[in-house]
Image 1 (cartoon, rainbow, N blue to C red):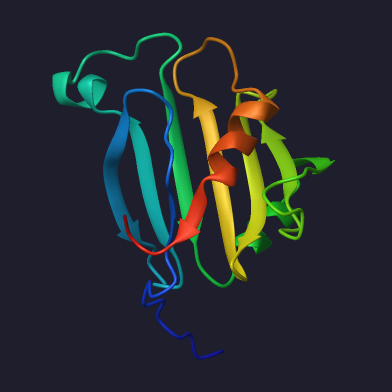
Image 2: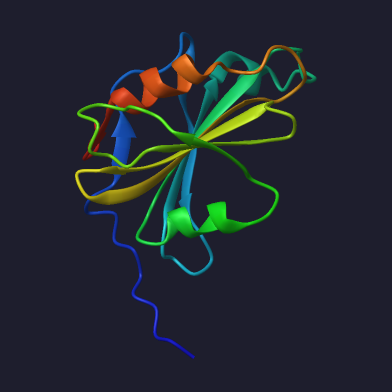
Length: 143
C-alpha cells in the first residue's frame, strides 16, 4: 500500500579494492527497484562454466535505502559491531550458514549498504578481517 520510489543508483556504493582475481560478474536492481546489487567473483571460474571448485568465493554489494532491514530476519546471526573506516559507519557483522557467509551492514557516506562475502563450494570461510578490508575500500560512485 505504500508508494515505492525506484532506486536510481545515484549514490551507488562500489569497492575500490577487490580480492585477488575478482571482477564484476553481474549487476541488477531488485524487483521493487529499491536497491542495486553488484556481484563479484573470479571471472575465470564463471567464463569456463566449470563445476564448483572448493574454496571459490563470491562478493555481493547491495546498495539502497532499505537494505539493512534484511538483517532483522532470524536466519542472520548478529555478531556485533566492527570498526570500519572512520568508525562512524555503524557497521555490524552478521553471519549465516555456520559462518560460510559473512555479512556487513553499514553506512557509506550516509548510504545503507549490505556487503556479503562467502564461500560458494565449501572451504575456509572468509575472516572478519577480510570483509572489513573490503568494506574499508567502499566508496560512492562508479569506478
